[in-house]
Length: 260
Ligand SMILES: [Zn+2]
Ligand SMILES: [Zn+2]
Image (cartoon, rainbow, N blue to C red; front, side, top):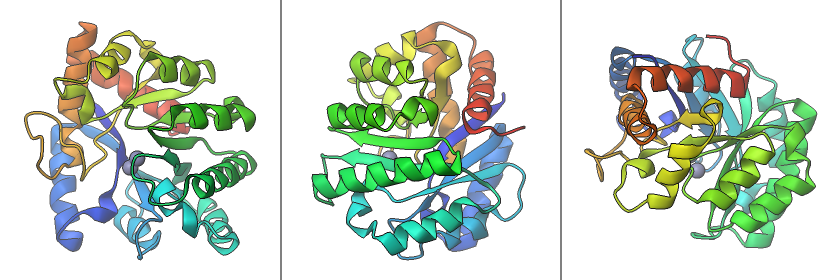
């Protein structure tokens, strides 16, 4: 089975580099052909931990950006550093960026400013964006439209909303990435979108170490478990899991301009 984890936080792995190698061994053994890992501007180590983990491994790529939780740290200096990071090898997307009104770790107005600035930067850098949106669908869509996101492209990661956001995102040419949430029993709206969205726009991700899919819910997640998410999407769409895995690999490669 061919699989791609389109969103992981390898820099949050416990146990340092040994922890990372164990988790990567599991991933390659499970059939993963790629992992896109997020260089987390939310943590003190900045971006470097991620570049050290990825090295020159041909199966891993990086998205770098300032997370909405850290919106208040999106100072002009921080944006300048990000601009340099985007030029480095392995970086194929800007993200994750967006709005999170559930946690509100940064003021909503500050989050919006950081989001808009980074969308402009993505356009200049000619990179797709990885969007995080939680309890902020209306503002997220309005900003994406205002900033001409149609010409930027990218993915709504960890899709956890319903048809309205899905249609708006698909209309702008975006992809939808499903996480372990799609395996949870009470996420009917998310499952409906996973069952009906156009096949060529669906990605799968673990968002590890968060959001382990069933049957591992509540435990520390890892990229190998993207398999359970693909299985669930295949079940919802009544297609063969192998085929679904193949489709998500192709879609991820297309979304981020990666050749596998
Ligand atoms: Zn996120
Ligand atoms: Zn994430």
